[in-house]
Image 1 (cartoon, one colour):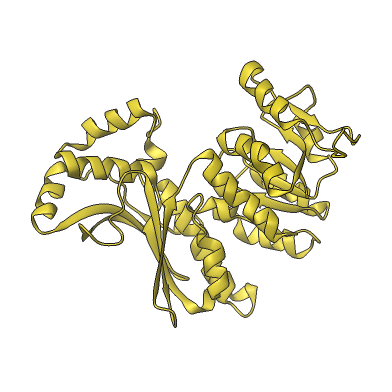
Image 2: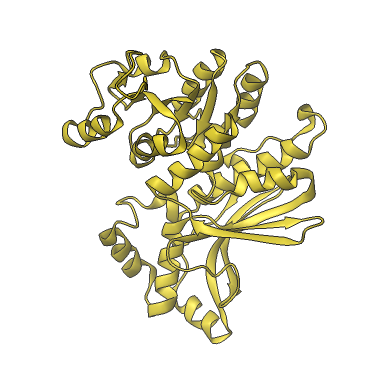
Amino acid sequence: MKLAVIGAGAVGRSVVELAAEYGHEVVAVADSSSAIVSDGSSGASGQVGLDTEAVVTRKAEAGVVGDAKPADALAADYDVLVEATPTTLGDAEPGFSHVAAALERDRHAVLANKGPVAERFGDLRTLAADSDGDIRFEATVGGAIPAVSTVEDIEPGHVTAVRGVLNGTANFILTRMAAEGLDYDHVLSEAQDLGVAEADPSFDVDGTDAALKCVILANVLSFGAADDPADAREFTLADADVEGIRDVPGSALRLAAEDGRTVRLIGEATGETVRVAPRLVPENGTLAVSGTQNIVQIETSHAGRLNISGRGAGGPETASAVLGDVGRLE
């Protein structure tokens, strides 16, 4: 498959670097201010794609991927558009328009960007229904963890709930607070020094990131279980009940430990509700993953409870989910 990659952050760069290992060619790459597009000529190997190593090197050294305009990448001759720009809320732009442009050209789109799937799921479904292209978005929920595809394989109508630890930054902070008996502010500063938390950690510690992932899962459950999509409930972030971890005191974790429990930021999605909040869980239980690990727990009608854990973020990890989706479109 020929890929156009929009977004040259950690995930976009990793998709560019790893695409060949998965049997795909990158024919266009764009960042926020520049692009590079293959001229269509074959190299010594017979491939028509870009020299991906050169693209990544130029981005690292010059801050741009090429001399063309970002719009040129959207107009390139590709099979799949990979949307890996930063997540935005509300109208989910410009990511939504990038995906719309691909579908209007009857091309596929694979998203790592949570915004369009969480905030405009119904619009995406309508565009895909009118296109010969399709959309996939495994990478928007839990990085390398195959949460969406597992729910689809089971069939959403047979899944009663999906819950889990879906944000590595919040989980790192809670893990350190419990292990060292430290308060939130101290551990947050440590996490920022280590690069685990952003300078502005709000998106992670306030529960927004986990809530977006749960909104996406709720949409998968709602639309997947509906006989008629018109009967499905569409969720956005506004429908989520969200509480973050800023107000969790170290004393709460110490008291929980005395009772054999700990605290984790747990998100839960059903076809009717989305909730994210700190919860008490058994200290040695399945949901008590440590550090930056994530876990997704799927409650099913006939197969019991399924647990999938792994790295919920990171360039190569998330790129593996993107490229797995590309493979599903072949």
